[in-house]
Length: 276
Image (cartoon, rainbow, N blue to C red; front, side, top):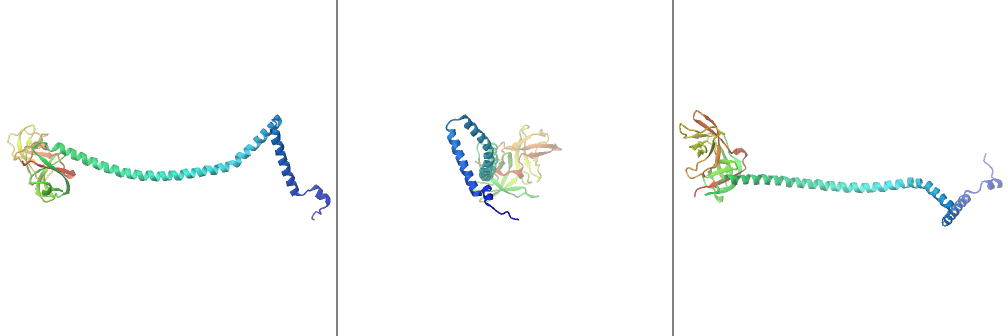
């Protein structure tokens, strides 16, 4: 059954709003008293204030932790976005650097190849035109290559063609802006040469293999395996002393020479004009 309120009940159970108001007034009054007493430098008040501070500090730390966490999370997100942007920029920069590196390496290789050509081309009584090999026209019967220079650039028929390692062949046909090189291995190739150590002159004749042979040697030839073969300069077409190859075998009067130049891997050549 519901409890019937009486005047006594109102006396012992005061109205809650009145209780809250009274508590608020008491707390404000107490705070004012503590503030006034703190100004008096009373040791008891100072001790009480210290105890209250010790009790409230953990509560303040717990209360502030979520706010600090939110602040730290915001800073972390900003830094993460910044790092992501920097990472993208660094990746793009790396790609650009790799492109420049590839171009630099290609230019370095080309520069080294062209510098090596200067060591082979005779310095005296000759001019030369550096060209790029654009096609290999080699086949089972014809061993040749096409370069991107012709009569417009001053190329003439029968001129010597060298790479950075030595003699590669001679000019066979000349067009306006292109020329065909007859390689040493072609059976139509005949180059006047001399053995550096034995001082014996002969003709290097191609045979459509990788190792041409020496012809017109004397019966008592002293040429041995390992002998270095260079151009003799006979005929006035080729300069003297261009490296040609090395003797690899001497069998029953047949002397085979391994050319210094592997035409299959050559990119740049120099055409030498020695006709003056």
